[in-house]
Image 1: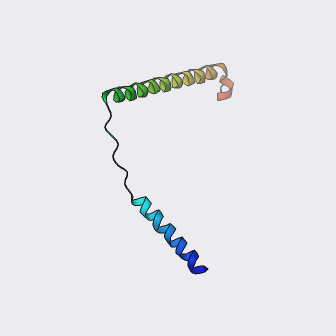
Image 2: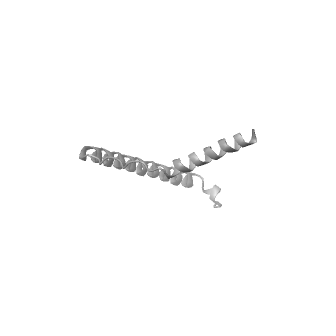
Image 3: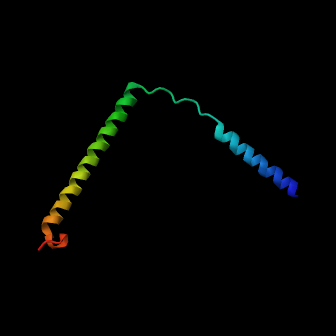
Length: 74
């Protein structure tokens, strides 16, 4: 029984090692339309992140101006 379990465990380890060394085929080249779509998505997400950062900074400044006692000032 122990030999069978040892053989199964060895086979599983060998299979895992072989799977980790396997290489995937290269991705197909992207068309110009796909590249443009990806660039547009990246630009849109960057603009959204900039807007969110600006909104958070404005909120922090408003809170600072509203509560100067919280910052140790009277």
